[in-house]
Image (cartoon, rainbow, N blue to C red):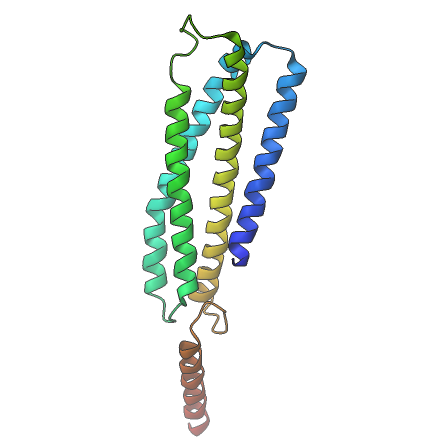
Length: 189
């Protein structure tokens, strides 16, 4: 596992734990019944689901631009770069699916059901908080992976760094050879 993925996983896990702990503690401190907490938190969780869906689909679409930029680079990038992009795409797709399922499940008319035992509201409330924490942490992890990958592309394509680990060694040797030839031509002139 490379550094980009490790950082993203750590960032996602830490943010998930912080969000889950914060919402759990606030739920315990407030003293409200689970039904009231569920009513009050539902609009925020729905907004989070919509934001994650919108942001993730935008990221997925803009990754095509990233791939085009990567392919048009003068340097040939290693397979690791494309595996990083594939990992982001897979993670982002999983996040979209999880957000859609969470959104649909939390919009079932549970409050209008008369046969639902009040103990279920506690369970539903904590499941909804857990899902919201996972979605938030997952979104942060995807953004961190994307940041690492974009940083590498900027270094290689934008700043023209030739000794980057994601540039294939053949291209690095060829670029060095061209630079030496150019320097020899300058010396002869």
